[in-house]
Length: 211
Ligand code: BEZ
Image (cartoon, rainbow, N blue to C red; front, side):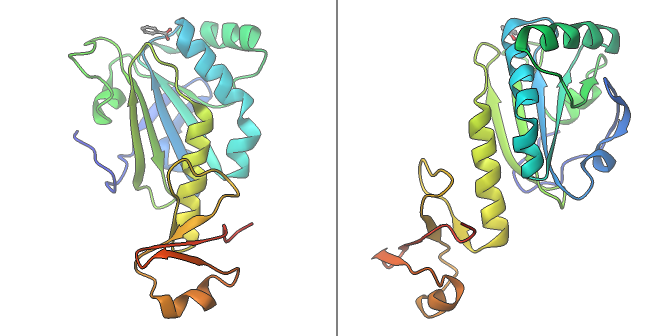
């Protein structure tokens, strides 16, 4: 399936290291991160799953559930998770989907045949509570993802969902944000009582509203 931003994330049922799940039920009414791994027992993936487990509290603070997927089977996942726990000094506390027939990998377009026709690329999908796809990232197998960046995007998306703001280049928690063009100058004082700076008529900034 050719998924794009704003599309509804397809639901699926899967076997995982935490038992059988229905994707939508697992996400509940919170945010979700679904990310794929080329294969079990590979070095970069081992560090990525470990890092995600270490960030458990950071995802929970953002009301976000994570789920990883690899096209290997459950038996393989179980042995690999033991290795991850041992080598990354953590406990993998989120489901790792077994997808040996690549049903879910195909549903989410995670196999890019010109990169590899038997392994997924490193895809990341961030899904909002209404099950819309809010972010899609694709990394090559040889580059481990930056999980701080994934948390940063969740922060930005949640700000945008709750206030009429966007986040500028390299924004990080606590920095000023950009007021959405849909807000007129007249509305700003009531909507953004912390004040604002009008750099240009189309570029108006304000302190982060939820800080
Ligand atoms: C890895 O996770 O280390 C990896 C997987 C596939 C190709 C290259 C590296």
